[in-house]
Length: 424
Image 1 (cartoon, helix red, strand yellow):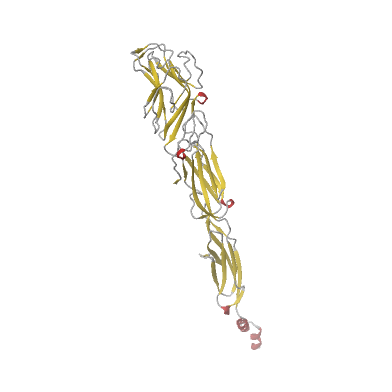
Image 2: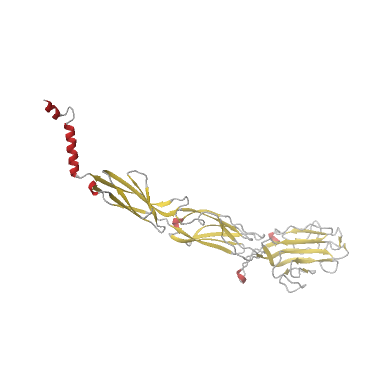
């Protein structure tokens, strides 16, 4: 199994679904919307305490002016309970925690409500994070906030980002008994998130893992992932596109894409010959690409074989030789296999071979050649079978002596005509 890639990159998790890119440091961004029409899939509402509750109602609503516990404010809201008092320091914190391979580098809240919070009536609240000033208060009537804003209460945002971001409502008085008209709700949340690890690809077998020269059908099999998820998997062989996969993008979650593995058969004969580049690639929800290139030797040319030599010879000419000559494509000739008169084949690891033939009679030679390219089963490319016939005969004088000997033998046999005449 080959781990094919690791690229550091950045993403932006926003609630609106638009994909943004940044040129700085060649890092990419994505956006994910939380709440509004996208729902709250980043964090669950926190548990309530006496005097303070929390609910998620996405989409939210316009400023309700008032609410009840059965019909609380919209958005991802923390609100005070008119039916219960809160002791000093009692609080509810709503926290959005980034995954372990992401940090929140910035955020924007285009739609929020801060009503009855930090107005001197005993209830406080605001946003919090790790690093920098670690928090900032909201103010009564605040409708939006971002990590780069220069208005409102002063704060400092951590340059390296934060692992979490949240908002809270706190009872700051000795006892808070005036609940029922205070709430802090985030109606729409946009998180800019930087990945701490990038996309990767894995190709455990098949075409990518092939070694040496190949031919025929091969399996294209690879997959991968990234913190934001791979949206597209693609490949090419010799500059021509191969099968790929893709997935839709869910802009309301951290891991937005999940393109399935590519697992397709590829006919290498359609993509040229020789040393050709095989490229595997992907892009994730942040638009960050990853790709790897391997050089593959492809040879789908059928080898050739030709035979030459005598077709007739006397025994007095000695041992005869039939010549076999093979040809192949870019992988070259692996060798020649020949069988004489049906005997087990003999392998010649060369492009040319001579087969010795002797003995009176008609001899039959069959040969084929193989190249150095193998298919997925391991079989080499082979030529068609070539055949050659060679007759080896005794010389004429030898045939005559043999004929005369046979005649003498016939004459001395009992019952032959000449023997009978001699007897008479």
